[in-house]
Length: 369
Length: 234
Ligand SMILES: [Zn+2]
Image 1 (cartoon, helix red, strand yellow):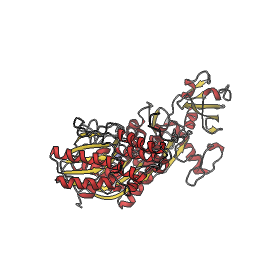
Image 2 (cartoon, rainbow over the protein chains, first blue to last red):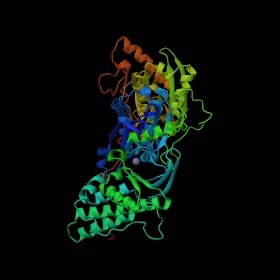
Image 3 (cartoon, rainbow over the protein chains, first blue to last red):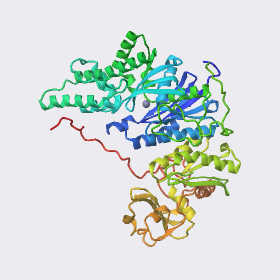
C-alpha cells in the first residue's frame, strides 16, 4: 500500500449492526462489528428502538476495538466517514452523532456517505479498484437495487429496484412461514442445498415482456410460496421443507441474476458486483458466476463478512472521498433516513466558502490517478 | 451538555463560573444542533475542545432519540480526549436552576400524555427516583408543591403552581457538577447532599454522579409477533 493513501475510519449504524472499520486506501486494516441481531430474533425482524439502544451501548467500545485491531492511532487518521443514510432514522443518528464528535475532537474532516454506495465501494478492499463503470446488484433485508456507477464518489445511477419487498425480506418471511426463525437467509440457503430447485415452479416476479426490465417484485412470490405451503398443511400432508426452500430461493436468484446480467448487456458494462447481505447466498453466487461467465461479464462479489453491513465499507468510500478531493460534510450533518442513492455523500452546505480552520487540510489531488 | 429534553444545551464551566453557554429549543433537530453549539461555545470562550478536563452529560429521563445524541457525543469526546464523563439526572439540572429552598417537583414532557418527574427537598436534593407517569395520576401526591419544568406548563390542571425554569440549561448542569466535583474531591462521600439515586455502584463513578448511560424509563415498543398471517383465502 502506498504511504500517501488516505487512512480513514468509517462508522455504520443504519440498521442492526454497529460497525467500525479502518482502511488505508483500498487496504482493510480493521473491521469491528457488534450486532444486535439476536435481540431482534424473537421479534421476527429488526426493532428500530432496540437497534438504536444497542448502537449507543456499542458505539465507543467498537471504535476503540477497531483502532486496536488496526494498530493505528486516531491522531493519524485522515478522515472520519459515517453512513448518513438511508436507514433507520434513530439508528443512523447514533452513528452520525458519534462521527461528528470524533471528527471534531480529533480535528479531522468528516464525510457523511451513502450506505448503498458504501456497499458497492467495499469491493475495493477485496478485489482492488472498482472498474468504471461498474454495474452493482445490491440485495439485503433492506434493499434490492440495480445501480450503475461510473464514479462511486459522484455518479451512482439507479437502474431498477424492488417495487415491494426487499429480497432479504422475502427470505425472512418464508423462513417464518416454515418456522425456521430469524434471519431467514442462512437457514434457507442451507436447507436448499438438500432440496430440488425445480421441484415447485414458483412465479418469477416482473419478468413479463411488458414489465419494467430492471425492477424487482418479491411480494407475489412470497404469497405464492405461503399459499403452496398452506395448501399442503390444510390437506394434512407433510411440507417438503428442503424442496420449498430450494425452489423459492431459485425463483429469487433467477430473477436477480437474469436482470443484473441483462442490465450489463444493455449498458455495455463488463463488470458486475454483487453486495448486501443476500450476496452471501451460495446459490446466488453460483448462478451469477455461471450467467456472467456465459455473457462475458467479470463478476466481483466480496466475501460474506464484507457484504453484510459493516464499518469497513463506509471507511472504503470515505477513503475514496478523501482520495478524490470531495468536499467534507459540516458539523450540521444530519442523518437522512431516505438519502437518495444518487447522493454518494453529503457535502457541507458551504463546501466552498466554509471556513475549515477546525479540520486538517488534506490533499485535494486524486491520490489514485 | 444535555439533549434529553427539547432543549439542546451546551455550557463550558471553569470550576468557578460558566464561561460560555448555548441553549436552543428544537425538539426535532438535536442531531444537527449539538456539535455546532459545542463549537460556538468553545469559540466564544476562545478555547479548543482538548482544553476540556471533564464532561458532564444529562442522562435523562428523556424521549429516546434526542437523549442519545448527547450521550453518544459525550462518550465519544471522552474516548477521543481521554477525559472522564460524568452523568447527571436531567431533572437535577432543572431543580438546581430553580434555586428553590422548599420542597418541590420537577416535571418534563415525556410525550404520550405523560411526564418524567421527581420530587426534591431543595434545589440540590432529590428525594425520589425519576419516574414516568400520567399527570392526573400524580397530581394528588404533588398537591401544593411548586412544579418546575415544561411538564408543569403542559398540564396546568394537574400542576397549578408552575415555576421557572421551563427548559433545561447546561449552565445549571455544569454548575451543579462543578459543585459535586469540588465536594467529591474534598470529602469523597456519596451522602444525600450529593444526590440520590440510581447509581449502579460500579467503580469509576464519582460520588454524586451517575454513569453516563441513558435513563429511558420505558421499554422499547416491540411486540413479539404471533404466528404469521395466513394468506390462503377462507
Ligand atoms: Zn445494507
